[in-house]
Image (cartoon, rainbow, N blue to C red; front, side, top):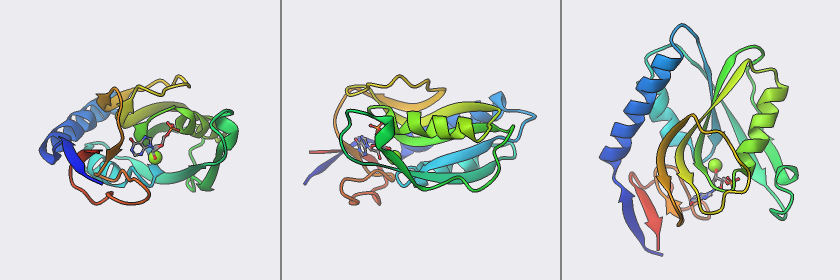
Length: 170
Ligand code: IMP
Ligand code: MG
């Protein structure tokens, strides 16, 4: 399949810096726990964390969706859980892309149950076309209407993650 650059790496870098500055400002005096939703988030997460100028803790969670998308939350299983304590701590969930919203809504519920003091959402890409669960997004890199995106960590059948730019799969 062919790929076409949608957002070049220099634009990604610039936007990641802006989001990091905003988070550093909003969370000043706190030490938020940044939780990355694996695997797609890896490069975004690594770049973001290093641009944030306040102390943070980091951890990861991995969610996999099974079966039909008819009953969103019940189809999400966690194949890697958060390991550090988030009890009474401010949490920022970091996602690669929000599509239907079901993965994120299941992750939010899990983080709530683990006693987080507050939960903010940070997503590299907000894709609007197929949204069926409303999720509040506090920090958003880029918004797109539709299409399938790969690169900068995002995959299609585990391929294309290595591409440095965000690309459209043709
Ligand atoms: P949701 O539960 O429908 O919001 O799906 C979220 C997950 O689906 C993301 O974390 C991605 O792993 C995957 N996904 C959705 N759209 C795309 C895309 O355009 N490119 C790559 N992965 C995607
Ligand atoms: Mg993902």
